[in-house]
Length: 118
Image (cartoon, rainbow, N blue to C red; front, side, top):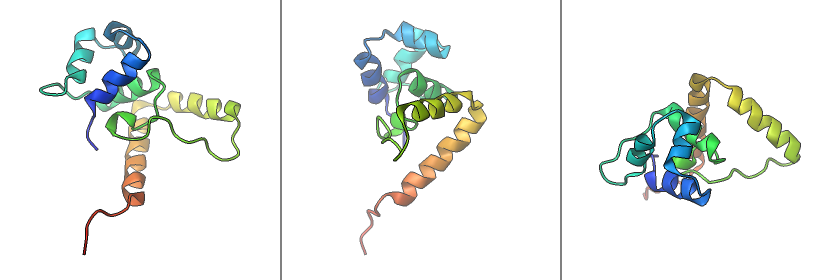
């Protein structure tokens, strides 16, 4: 799935954050955020910046590429266990996060119903 700039804009605005605030959290300039949010002619963020934005905005991994906003809670996990899992996720290196993202994308593709007709 392709990067969805309107989702970044909506998520940022829903938190009532300025571009400068989000930019400061992920280490880019406010103008960079503006370019990412542009629907036509905007630039696509690098993978590590997408991850950082999703983490900062408390979005599920893959949301800015069309995935669900929040992942459903795993059966049997308490809020504390989910928080611990999220903390471990933040400790992964950008390379490992990217590898996990690619696995997640593959799983989503495999579990989507086929749209081709015979």
